[in-house]
Image (cartoon, rainbow, N blue to C red):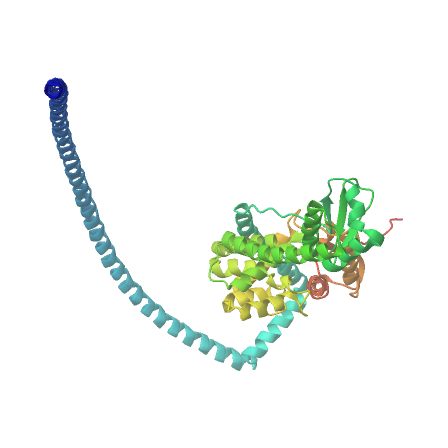
Length: 519
């Protein structure tokens, strides 16, 4: 009985639990169905929104397609309009060209007619010349029979009589003609030179023999000198310059005639001061490094100058030699800047007188190339420059301009003369060059000595800063003809024996004074 009760109890409990779980499952199913319904509704709404967006996108796309079609039609219409205008212009130009061709054909016909007339006229003139030559020959034969003198003897006698009778008039006429020719030549030359100079504006910086190196304080001077002067001695030995340590505040001077050495010394000293380690080992290392940097700088200077000059095709090693001119001076004038200036002036003058501007420009640019190595190779810088140009296969016409610009080789081209003139213009213009007082005085003394070396000279004065000398001659020894010759002889001797920038004008003055006393 108890077991049956237990079994029935278990059955009833199981039925209750089963019913409870069945009710929970139905509730969960209902919740799941409600959530699914919500998701389905949301998905349907999202689909409707997407469909709406698609419709809007299709509408915008159709609008843009319509707008693009309109723009395309406008572009096509504009292109057609331009085509019509271009066609009208071409037709108009063709009509003008046809008119010009007709006019040219007419002129050619007239020219042919004129040419035929000219040929007939020249034939007539030739016949007349033959008749005139025959008459002259008959007269000459008759005159020879009468005077019993040949043509050459009669001409010589006539000239001697005329010279004897009209010597003073001939001298005056000669001087007048010479002055007129010089005046006309000077006028034309000045016009050409002025036009060339007006087109050029070049700056020339005069270099000194000293360079100042700024220091952060005077305490650095002691470290530069070093114990017992070993630092400064090592520095001067490696750089080849003199370092002057004086009472100038926060600065030392680097002295030397070679710009490359001074530049290397300045850069090296600046690096040493900045680094702070100043001792013989570091000095040697820094100086060697700076020398390599300066070598690269020379190449850059050369490339920059070649680009500025507008020349192409030069050998890279020749360009590097050109860059060395940046560290070379002549009478205080930087040679690289002087070379650029001479190249530009020569090109401008050549274009004015009808010479070859390219040859003149390159010849002027390279005319002082020998100065880059003249301290290493024996000989004049003009001939050294010639050898350099030949080594790097520079054009022969340009090489001739280089070798002849100081008259060491006879000139055989107008371009060489132009380069020489451009060199003189650049060197002699005010502010281009400067000299020391001793050099200046010595040049004036040499000019006066050349003038007094000739017989018949009374006094000589060098004036205009050595650009002119006035030679007073003894009138009883030197006549007018000899005075003219004396001016030429003095000028040639100055060219041959002296070195000077620019030109020197020689004025020979012959003054005769006559006096008497009335009693």
